[in-house]
Image (cartoon, rainbow, N blue to C red; front, side):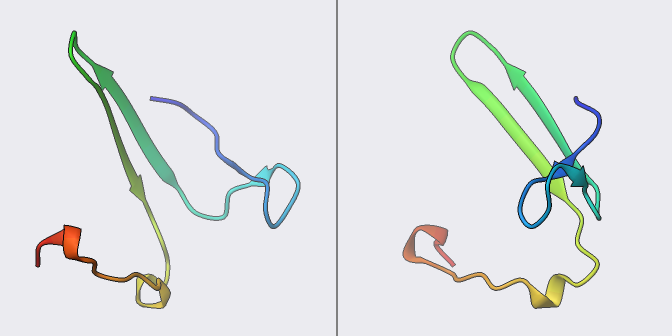
Length: 55
């Protein structure tokens, strides 16, 4: 795990306004990355479902 997150756009290495927690793990065959990104307004996130999402 790491500590401290900063935003570079918009801003110039300002402390991030919301928390993001990332974890990294590995084994002999793969590298695993996982992030939990908090957002005070998740309804404002624009995302699209694609064929690869298989929903």
